Length: 232
Image: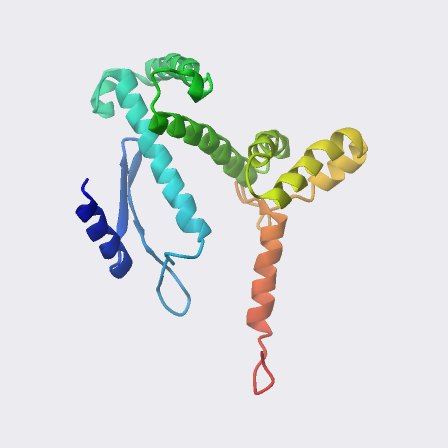
């Protein structure tokens, strides 16, 4: 893509609503709007301020596209539906299991140790590794599995030690070390039991306790909003 084309795309994204359209053989097509539903109006996603939901969606779409391409290369067919149309579920599971192990062996060495990897390939391998941990972490929060959350936090703790988020890095290091060297088993169990809350008692309805508190704060501010000349 030329620089002129990139400039035109950037200008269009800035001035016009845009859509991400995603299609996968295992999922129905879905469309994601750049604009966010708002109680008062529809507002654009900021191009300067961080937005969790937009970033989360972009990461997931990118990961799905990368993994889909890896499978196309691994199976030697760019049409994944046709590549598996003559196979039953058991055969597909066996094929996936075998191919996954081959891909894991290929991606297991640190990217700098693999001569055939370009810089973009190395970056993509690191992206895949980090996204697998991120997706696992998000999934186990929803189902309320504290044990798997603890395992995911081990990897996230190591990842953050090499970044600039020093406060998060130290907090996670504390969470990693305290249960082993400071807390009693009973204290560990009680503290970790407070990490998640399920307000509706439904399956896959767990959310982080601090997020629930933020929802409460927002509700309190909305219900008891100050009015009149003295409001701030």
